[in-house]
Length: 266
View (cartoon, rainbow, N blue to C red):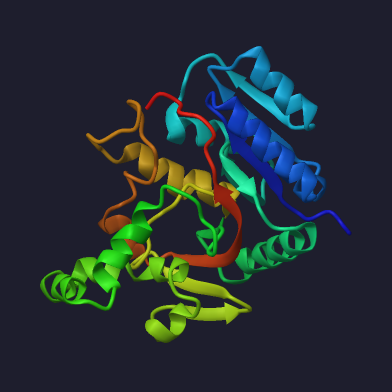
């Protein structure tokens, strides 16, 4: 099995039990052997975090203070090579076997360039983990009941913006929303940013596009809502700029489950 042309980057502010669990799964199912370019960004680091990163042969990127999600991912990406990069938070467990992982990553890397995608989502569709706020919102607007139909009638634009999340709810979302959700190949679905917000969890992106287009835009957007006092990208990009650009997003069958093992204090 040949190496794939991508790099892995993990952001881990504390939460070292989750980090250990995730890195163990990456070793168990072969992800860590699919590239030699592997990094863990450790804001407000401790010796424990460094030991875990080095135990699994990931290069630690160290910074004394907490940078938040935007700042942490920016520093991580800046220290990674050009080309496709897989960005992960520390609580994303790999739940698929080596063959499936390799197959999805190889296809995702090829489609990233072929379709000029802004991101490929690799959070598992069948077992995404919790929390998943977007999925709950989709169900509230698109379930087959009177309340959902009423919501769609009075808030059609809001309902439309949630359609992309149908890929995590329906087995064949292209048949539920024909012409809006497009099936590319073998359960890979293509949507635009008109109907799906930016996501930080388990994404494959082009490193330079990510830094120049996503990070820079999020940095310049003023927002009063923050996570633990910092910008988190998802909040800043939930706006008309994101939707009007109609960026292309690919939803893969998915490899990772959100599984946090302990509370981080926010």
